[in-house]
Length: 406
Image 1 (cartoon, rainbow, N blue to C red):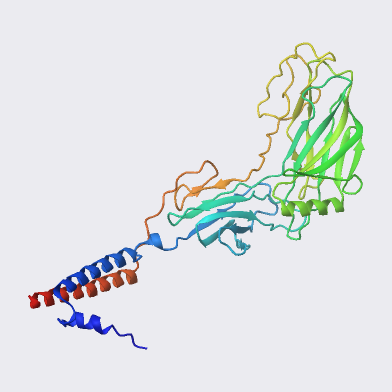
Image 2: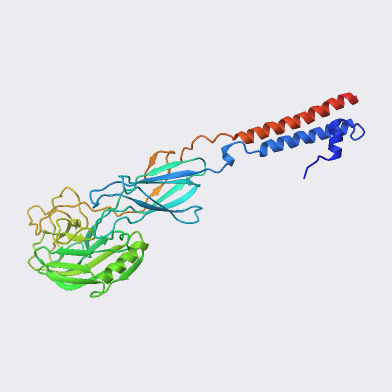
C-alpha cells in the first residue's frame, strides 16, 4: 500500500495561494518548527537511552587444602532479571580457576559455588557473593573470593573453673559442601581432656542453621565413644545424609557438640586449664597426619569461694578465644599446647564496583565511576539529519512562496 500526503499539504507546499493566506502560511511554518524541535528532543542519540550491560568475572583463590588441586571451579548466578540460574564451569583440562558471566543487565546478583569434587577428598569452597551492577554505565566487575577452610571453634559455658564443679565444653564445626553426588563421607569430632578434668558421660549434638536448630539423636545420627579422657563423636550414615541435605540447601551449617566434664578438687588456684579439639571431615582420615585443629581454649582456676586475685597469665603470641591464654606468672599450666588462630566466620560479602574493569573486594559501597557513554548510532544520526533537511526545505518553500505573494 502506498502512503500519500494529504492534498491540502501538497497544495500548501507547491504554492496554491488560494488554500492558505500569508498569515496562515506563517502560522503553519511556526507549527512545523515546533514539530521539528519536539522530534529532535525525542530522538535517542546517546547511549543513555540504550540498554546497558555488564559482566562479572569470578577468580577463585587457590589454597593448600585442596586435594587433588583446586580445578575446575563451578559457579551459579541468580538474581536481577534472570529467568533461570546461569551455571558456568572452568576448563577441567587447564589450571583455570576463573569463570565470566557476560551480558548482564543492571541489578543485584548472587554467585554461589557448586561442587566439583567427587568422593572423600577435601575441597575448600567460597561463601555466597552478592554483586551489584549499577545503572549509570557499562561495568566489568572482577571478584576474588577467598575460600572458606574447615574450622572448629572451642568454647565453654563458663568463663572460669571452680575445683570440684561441673561445666560443659562446646565444639562448633563448619560443614564442607557435599560432593558432586550430594554426599558427605566423614564427620568426626574428637577431644582429649587435660589433667584435672574427667568426663561425666553427658553429651549432645545439634545442627545450627541460621536461627534454626536441628536436634540430633545419639545412636541414630551419631555415636559417642570414650577412651580414657578422650571423647569422640562420629556421624552415622543417616547423620551424614541429613548433614549433606542441610548443607546443600544452606551456605552456613554449624555442627555443635557439647559434653560435660568434672573439675578435680586438686586443681591449683590461679592456674590455667588449656584444651584443644580436633575435626575430621571429608579429606581428613582419622588415622592421617592432618586434622582441623580448634583454637587453644583456656580457663582460669579460682578458689571455691570465688574470692582472691587470680594472677595475670602471660600472653602467648597468636591469640586465642574463650578465656585467658597462657599460664600465670608462677602458676603451672596443666596442659601445654600451641596457639592456633581462630578461623574466619565466613560471612557473605557484598561486592560493589569501585571502577569498571578493576578488582573489587567487600567493604563499604562507593560511588562507581562509569565508562564513557556509548557513541550515537549511525542510523539515529542519519535519520535526524534527514528529518531536519526535509523540514528545513518545507520552511524555505513556505518562505519563498510568501515573498511571491507580497
